[in-house]
Each structure stands twice: as structure tokens, then as C-alpha cells.
Amino acid sequence: MSADTTTIESVVFTALEEFGAEKDAINRGASFEQLDVDSLDLAELSQIVEEEFGVNIKSSDVESLKTVGDVLDLIAARA
Picture 1 (cartoon, rainbow, N blue to C red):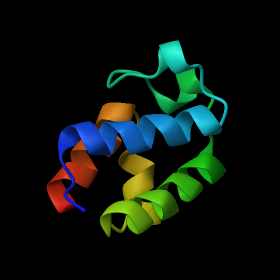
Picture 2 (tube, one colour):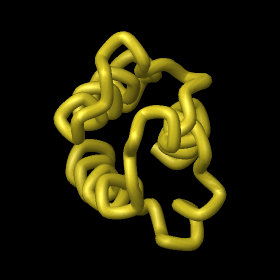
Picture 3 (cartoon, rainbow, N blue to C red):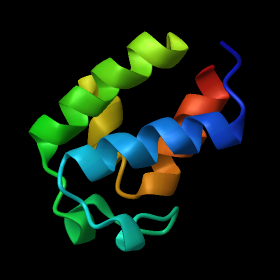
Picture 4 (cartoon, helix red, strand yellow):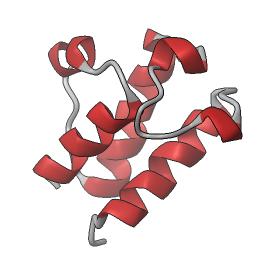
């Protein structure tokens, strides 16, 4: 599966919504704190990303990921 930015956004946004984030609040600039996404959600997101795109997000990466855009950029860079 090719990992273009639209596909990456779609997968990440859908996952965040499933974790309880408000659909209207999800955008590149939104922080995980604003979206009420916690470390367990991010661990689950990293599993989804690995299944979908074969990109491994390590726990050390997660610490530096503050916004949705951070995650999108990381996936795009590694996909």
C-alpha cells in the first residue's frame, strides 16, 4: 500500500476519532493533549500505523510527538 499523505491522514484521523477525539478538532496543528489522546492511545496508534504502512514508531519517538502533524510527518518520512 502506498503511503501518500492523504492516506496517512485518513488512517491517523480515523484512529484518533476511534479513541474519542472530536472529529472537528483533529488537524495537523492539534496537540494530543487538546484531543485528549493519551499514551495508551498513542501506543495503539503506533500499532495501527505499523500494520497499515509498515512504519515502526518506537516509544522514544512517541515522547517527541506532540501534535497530529508530528505523527503524520514521521510516518511520511519513514514510509
